[in-house]
Length: 124
Image 1 (cartoon, one colour):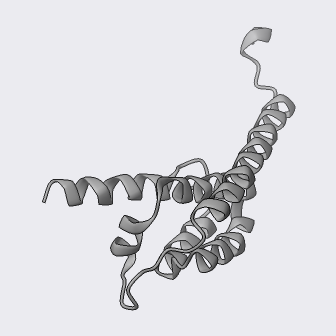
Image 2 (image 1 turned 180 degrees about the horizontal axis):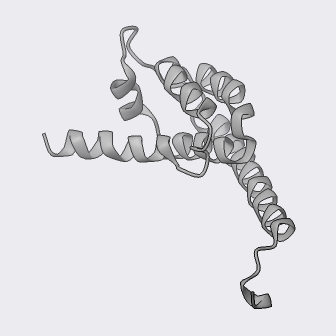
Image 3 (image 1 turned 90 degrees about the horizontal axis):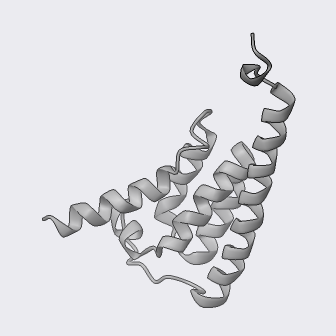
């Protein structure tokens, strides 16, 4: 096999870990900004997942996805605490479930769901 096509596992792991670390740093910076600007979101007591997602700013779902990518399954308890602090309890179950499914970390599921819910509302 030519040297240019060899798969170097060490190099791949270094790149992956660097991207995960960068994702955590960006998530923490965004999280500080979110806590400073947003504080808490008031939702009705009977709010469902879709209602909560419509009230959620894009920066929050972005942070959740960055944490999921950077911390893998350890993002679940962190996401639980963040959503509780922001008053977004209806999103907790889905976020934690998504965080615990192996292999979904590179896929920004919360961001994609946020976009789908907004498009669905727009085209009704």
